[in-house]
Length: 382
Image (cartoon, rainbow, N blue to C red; front, side):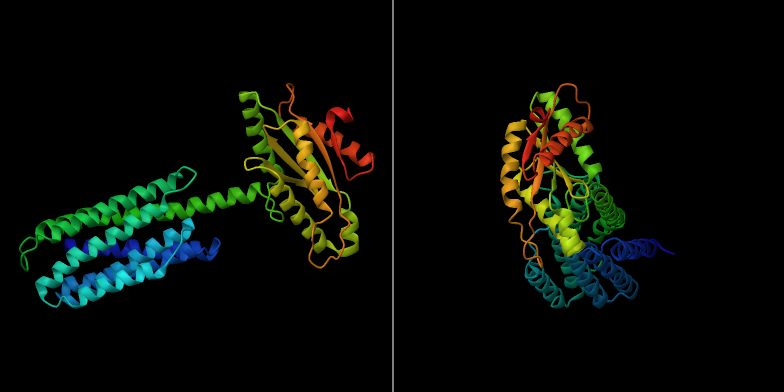
């Protein structure tokens, strides 16, 4: 087997493996749109490298044009998938219109030399632009790159350089064989490496996203979408350390719904679930960005209010208390819900959140004992 056959077999094999791997990831791990789009991109890549082999071995310009069309479609799908993953605005016309123009330009390049120059110049340049758009779309806002994202970003940039180098080498082609050596050298040495690197790092991004989803599921309550007890404990450890480091106050609020059992008994568990979701939304909307809301179990919730003392926390919870009775639950005409709150502030001897929970629970017990539907601060309860 000669070198071109080995090279094209490697590229075809890479596209095949990626298609299968991404199809499995899409089918079994959430069926996300961008994973399906990337699957289609590498599936087109399989056909594209087969057409490339046909063009090379059959000396047919037609198959080279098919290869160019495949490159355009594959690159467009890769860029679309990146924007889908990152939640960026997606206008399909922005990809379809320029792609159609480039394909039509190739179709009119009938001459053997002209056809090769058009494919060698326009297609790599256009694919390079698509990959550059993908790299820009991948850039995160308000956070740092994850390691898989960074690897994918770098691989895309290297692929951009490779494609632009191919476009530059194509401009030196002067005849059927004159000036092609540089183009072939760049293609044979750098294209397989960058193609494989992009494919591998794309899989790493999918795997990294899956790992992050699993971590999120482990830390979040599936019913209310706030943190569960494990997530709350982890957030509390960071909040306590930060409060001590900067000598800032930290308040913990433990609260629950006073009429929750009656609601469950009178209207069923579906109504109870609706009440928990509504209460969680109310708590989340009442606190600032950076504060923490978690479900501790049953109808009991915990809130960590950063840079907030017990008195200020009680004031925030008073607004929540006043709104609980107005929670609108679908299919439940009158809820009769109320809520009680216990507040505790971080003190010097606290080592972990559980130390604060003991005091906040004591304050919550006082609020219940004194008639419910009220707020108690631990120092008053003590």
